[in-house]
Length: 247
Image (cartoon, rainbow, N blue to C red; front, side, top):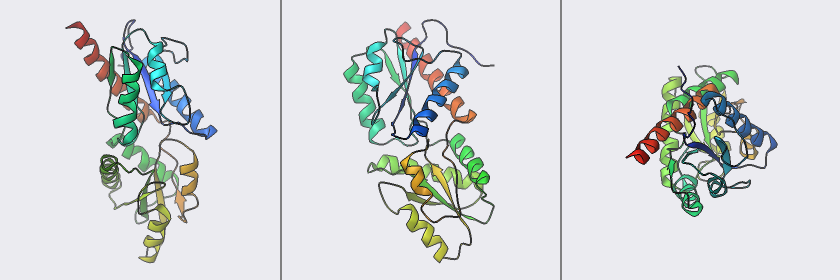
């Protein structure tokens, strides 16, 4: 049974990276709508709406701007697949700059077995079959904690598939995706598929199609598992925040 927020429950601020890709922006909007439906609330840009979206880069509004609009308590859910600079630095800084007195920040979305299961579904839809090589493609980060999260996420996907996966990066870090695809072919792989550890379409995902693989899985995107994961993050943090304010 789905429990819906009651009047006075904390607002949910869904924080994403931001992208210049129209498809990526549409996907974040669709994700927010789906989470709102799951929670039984409305998503809006209006002040004090029950669910708001914010961005740490490229787009606005920023988390601090959204939080300043809210009168009541708020739960910030970072829609990131690994916890790097944006999660450890940008989000806390934005919360502090907002001056909001009652904010809880959840863990990032990933890594999580739910995401690994979705990636496996996306891979099979792209044509992957047991025996095909898999490249786990992440955006990359200079933060060692984010790279650790990527290794954990890759391990979860390998367990889900029952097959080895090779980690590669799209933008920051090495090895890069085309290098790993080429290496797998040189080592005898007949077919190579890329598992996209990206949330939405954009420049990074487009680059994967130029990496020389036989197939590229879709980004994780809007999936019921992602929606439930965000809703669970919110509900857990909201209970703790309300409990702490009651004491």
